[in-house]
Amino acid sequence: TYVIAEPCVDVQDKACIDECPVDCIYEGPRMLYIHPDECVDCGACEPVCPVEAIYYEDDVPAELAAYTKVNAEFFDALGSPGGASGHGAAEADHPHVAGLPAQAP
Ligand code: F3S
Ligand code: F3S
Image 1 (cartoon, helix red, strand yellow):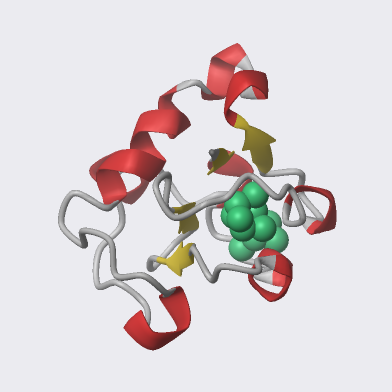
Image 2 (image 1 turned 120 degrees about the horizontal axis):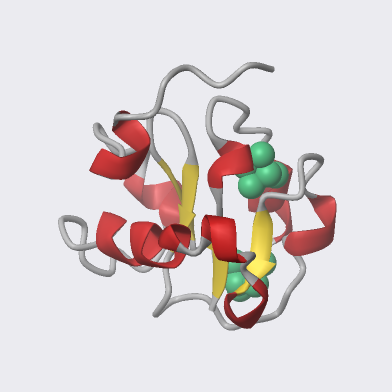
């Protein structure tokens, strides 16, 4: 799977959403999350993110390693909706993200 990491927080550019052929990038209040079971590893999202928040799971930098779990655990409550556009934005972020101070632009 691919993983969205901390640079997305409070930025939420959403260019990634338009590239995903399986609609597996889901919105939270402060960042977006990739569904690890729905992502087909096409990689189309990664180069379009203006803040380079997206990584292939094997390439997540050590300082951002927590985000692999953050993306996966975000879906503990949501399950596998099978499409982000039909689901709409979630009401809460993963606690790790919700607890971050506001990120400077
Ligand atoms: Fe976030 Fe980058 Fe997508 S800022 S919403 S991961 S384009
Ligand atoms: Fe979609 Fe990116 Fe995966 S475009 S299929 S989330 S690699």
